[in-house]
Each structure stands twice: as C-alpha cells, then as structure tokens.
Length: 157
Image (cartoon, rainbow, N blue to C red; front, side, top):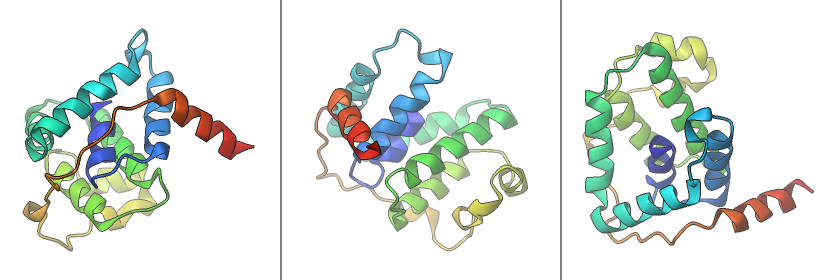
C-alpha cells in the first residue's frame, strides 16, 4: 500500500482514480484484511505533509535495502505503473519518479519487459534520475474513500 501511495503522491496530487485503485488493490489482497485502508492512507498523508521529500526518500531507502524476490519486485513495478497510469495522465514527473524507484530494485529490465512488454518507455535512460524533486509546498487533504468510491461508481453508470 505504501508503494501505491508514494506513486500516487509523487506528482504532487492524489487523483480520485489513484485512490480507487489503492482500494481495489487492498480489497483483492489478503494482506490488508481487517486493515482500515482509509486510516492508513491518512497516516501516510500526515507523514508526507510533515516531511515532504524526506518521506519519499525514506521509502526509497527502505525499498533499496529490502530483500525481495523477483516476483515481489515485479509486483512493485506493476503497482507503480498502474498507479502512474490510473488517472489516464502520465506526467514526466511520475516517470522520473518511477526511474528513481526502479534504481532501488535488483530486477533486470529484461525481466520487467518479459512481464510488461508494452512499458519499455518507463525503462528508457532519458533523464538524470537524481534530479527527481518533490514540491515541498504541496499539502494533501485527508482521504475519504467513501466519496471517491461514489464518484467511481457514478462514472461507471
């Protein structure tokens, strides 16, 4: 869930479609059974509002030190790309953040492309990855999943 949240927030905006995707991801995983997703997301909102780029850098630091299987790393890549694409608007800042996240993983580009052959542009070396920044003036509001889910259902009608 933290990976999804950080990918949603990395562009300075958390879109309703991104929140809807987080909820769907949590609902289909037994790992989050009994967890109040909204409360957890709001805990992340408080942390990112208080610490800004330090919150994101700490996530990346922990991810880089984690011992993950190839399958777990692939899942992180899939979640990150799903979150970036959730609002149907892929921003350069999001791809730039993905490349920073990608640096923390030990999985090869070939392994990623075997699973996600149409996502090659996320792997292209077109930027200086260390240039990723986060606008310290961004402030996120508390998350209300009920209102997001109502919007999501209304758009499906």
